[in-house]
Image (cartoon, rainbow, N blue to C red):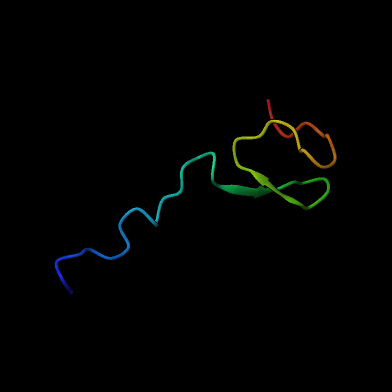
Length: 45
């Protein structure tokens, strides 16, 4: 395999790259968002 370790770094996405589904409109948004960018509803805190 040429000494390469396959798959390292791909199992854990950075928090900002993670996607979550808005509970109100169902669209995918960034995982660290406080508000949905599509419907404007507050998601947390």
